[in-house]
Length: 96
Image 1 (tube, one colour):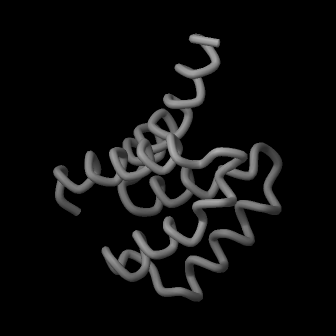
Image 2: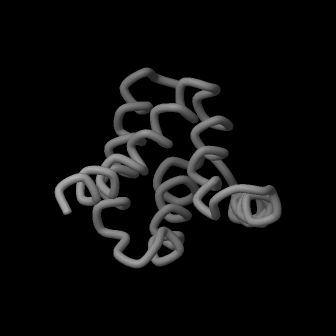
Image 3: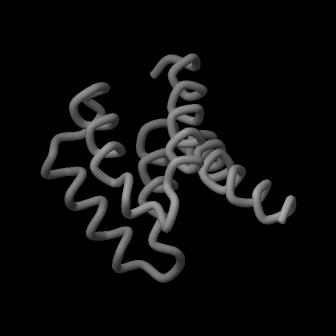
């Protein structure tokens, strides 16, 4: 994978996290569109399996984003997209 795309993926999740009022589950369809249809990293079936696995493992339900980052860009992707996912909410909480 190209290094430029890792930043594009992080930016995309940063924007989604800023828009996801009430939880990430409201933007799961856009995540699916981004990784399956736009970039072709996974098939629809693979995405469904990853989503199901992310719901079963202990921890927050947003682990799907970390798993997608890991599967596409290894540990760097997992770290970067997880930080991008939690940044908008953390900033808003700090301001409040």
